Length: 246
Image (cartoon, rainbow, N blue to C red; front, side, top):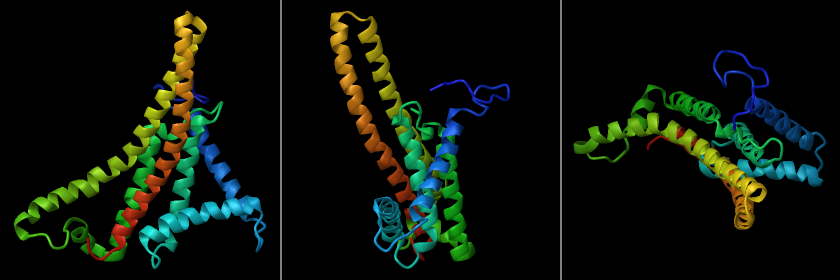
């Protein structure tokens, strides 16, 4: 979790170029290579590699973009949804790859940056679509009785403009950090029990190892699920910025 920086700079720990930054750059390179390679020589009857690329694209395009934003408006936002999904997915999966063994989204800065991009973007879309009237559309739900309208407006402002970006980022960060910590603790406990423990502890070490493997496999599922949830919420926020009424 706290490896030496590759290129240190600054007086504070963690301010230099480290493993987390290196993996982020590597993920961009790998994702770019994958989609360029799968689409370079497109055929009417796709091979396995081309089919994998098309299936990956269609999953985000149809299951998230088209289904959530709507068939009429979804196409301009597919590149953003695609980039977010595969960037988060790969950076999550780094946590279970030997040697890498670090989900970069377990560093809160990455999660804040991704949620911040989405936050600024859907607000921009709202003003682009509706102009200044978006301020009213975003905080005044239709059909609310006037007696409780002031309270609802305050709740909507807090929910949409403060709570939403925090939960969007912290859900990803906290899940990846906690899952990674559990696997690390299981590995550390297994190492100690099997190497330094007596007969009883060695038996517990075997159980701890089995539990760690099970948690590692479960973490893979959570990694994919969190990438999907992040992009799904992004699509929901975009769709909410485009509709006429809330």
